[in-house]
Image (cartoon, rainbow, N blue to C red; front, top):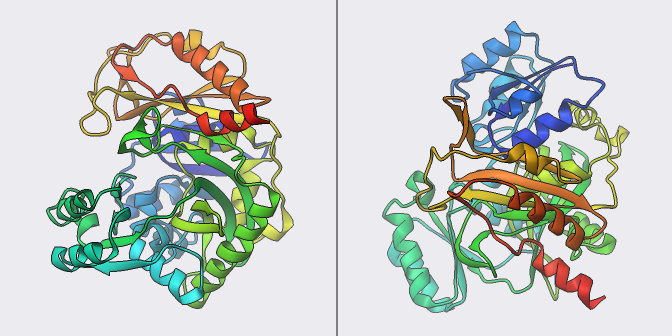
Amino acid sequence: MKVLLIGSGGREHALAWKISASPLLDKLYCAPGNPRIADHAELVSLNVEDHDAVVAFAKEKAIDLVVVGPEAPLVDGLSDSLRKNGIRVFGPSQGAAQLEGSKGFTKDLCARFNIPTGAYGRFNNAPKAKAYIRQQGAPIVVKADGLAAGKGVVVAMELEDALEAVDACFEGAFGQAGAEVVVEAYLDGEEASFFCLCDGKTAIPFGTAQDHKRVGDGDTGPNTGGMGAYSPAPVMPAEMVERTMKELIEPTMRGMAELGHPFSGILFAGLMITKDGPQLIEYNTRFGDPECQVLMMRLQSDLLELLAASADGKLDEVSPTFSDETALTVVMAAKGYPEAPQKGSIIKGLDEAAKTEDVKIFHAGTALKDGNLVANGGRVLNVTATGSSVSEAQTKVYEAIEKIDWPNGFCRRDIGWRAIIREQEQ
């Protein structure tokens, strides 16, 4: 198969690494890619927003499958443009990608199809949103309705913070994403990420993970796109996975089909495991970043075969297998992230760091400049390892990080802390 992978981040590096290991692969292209994705794929400078250009390239190269990594092209309808031209795609239609593109759409779906989630209100102006917040009281959660790169969510423990978050949205802090606001009940429990491969009819579990959203140790500071993750999530044993499938995923699949948007691709449920069971925080319609990195480290099956089965509506014929080992990844970010990351600083020592046992380094935001590898984004590297426990995987990752010479980079030092407390208690 000839495959075109869309994207340039750590998630896409992990996907390229795994796809390139498939015996089904003839040729892998990636647009636009990054310096280390080039180890696995031929990089193509396509403007992904120009659907006609992507379609023309896919036709010219006789691409058998397009794999869309990031959420923006999905919400923009790239999958539809490709399918209309007879090109197979892994990724949902524009209609189905509303599950990520509009938090209000998802909350309305939950209300209509009885999917457990926090109570909510949708608002297109600040006074109404603030009146609702004052009526409900804090803690409360304020979300920009649209895509805000993981940053448009404020978990407000004080009323004043919630009111400020509403102003930020309507004053344009998140651009068009904040034109509408969803205000929802604060859910108490432990967060988990749950993944399913879907083909419009069938959904099959594809692993669990736990992400660390806040920038600082001890879950402090502003929300980010994710500072680290590990898989599997101990808070998601087999019975919790079963409940999630039955109470959330299956009604979502039925509901989306009923609305005329059957869901195909990867469905990523952000969950809160409460005393009453799993509740939906949000849906994403692509592999998480950095959750994808830990899932790919544990996946034993042929990824390309699974992606093709999803695209072809044949998921009932495959079954993914994962290693029992734990995988853990730590994000190294550029100083100033998430507000104003400093780009252009030189990174050294990666070859030495990669020699650490069971460690793989995925590139999320790097570029080559004058022969040097430099930081080219907020989240820059994903230092990832496997081990027999969270503690063991964590030790290997931080051992590798010590070998990286990048004064302008920083990372959290406590990724996996919840699971490590659990391990110590056992």
